[in-house]
Amino acid sequence: MLKYRVSAVSYLNTIPFTYGIKSSKIYEIIDLQLNYPSLCAQKLINDEVDIALVPVAVLSSYYSFKIVSDYCISADGSVDTVCLYSNVSLNDIEYIYLDYQSKTSVELLKILCREYWNISPNFKNSKIGFEEKVKDNIAALIIGDRAFAANGKYKYVYDLSELWKQLTGLPFVFACWISNKEIDKAFLYEFNQSLKFGIENLEASIKSESDNYSHCDNPKEYLNEKISYILDDKKRKGMELFLKKINDL
Image (cartoon, rainbow, N blue to C red):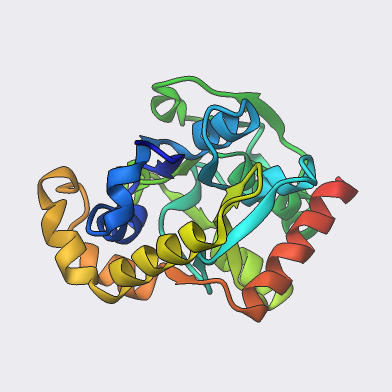
């Protein structure tokens, strides 16, 4: 009998989590769904799932939502997969396409435009295929696994997590495990143990999904050196500052 509906992000950086969940006994009592970040959030908002790995920007609007894990998707410096791409310098950018897959990265870009670069481009919503529109004075925010293909393709690349670290001195949290309701404590313990298992068995998680992530040349290096999974006090401080800045926009 299914007990909870769980939505996880379908990116390379999440495979330790999904591997841990699939290796745990809780896998038999949950409905595990894989989606891109903003869809994970929308499912949680619509009460289509009970727990989801969602962009942290959702916490600025839904105050009843609760973080239910000490694990997250974050970076303490450059992350390589949340970047602004352009063929012209910052001051010459007139339009920026905003990636439809994550609100958090969009809000981070707006903060950097305002507080770090002091530029005021026109922001445009995007649809599938928007990555191909980067030309002349048009730039794009591209996140997730699609950024692997974009890196090295354009003249200018701005890593948003790295710039956040320069702006604030703090790491950046992209996504947390969040619930829209009270979750049984015994289940949460087992759920977090499954996440811990996945992180501690990183190589096995990569091997289990190797056929799905051929676009990344060195997934082990990416997951070990770019992604940080522990939601410690410093990351919580960075997240709190980010949420405050969203409300100031």
